[in-house]
Image (tube, rainbow, N blue to C red; front, side, top):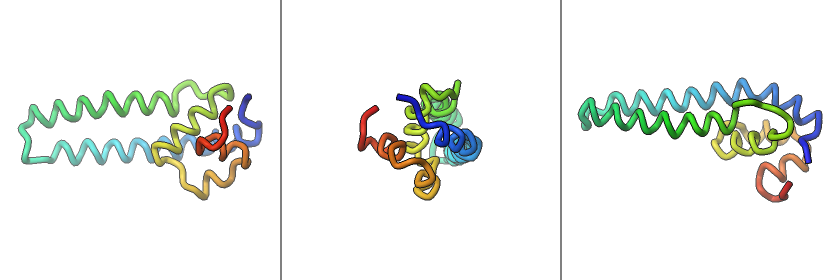
Length: 106
């Protein structure tokens, strides 16, 4: 089952906004960690390194190689990471919303 064409077009419009939200969140986490005076510079570096590895995997799952055949999966990742609002999700077809929320299996 593939995402409907109308939802695919909408998702393509939402990708850049969701990506900006993702990057903003990650950079805020990095900034907070980098300025944590309770840890040594080395501890901060290691924490940021681990954070970036984790977040890079999330970024790849949600945004890399976007195509219709994996659009449900990617939209689900975007939703689970809090990168799309309920209002934005409500613009998708009811079927797509159910898949993304895990209420209906593909």
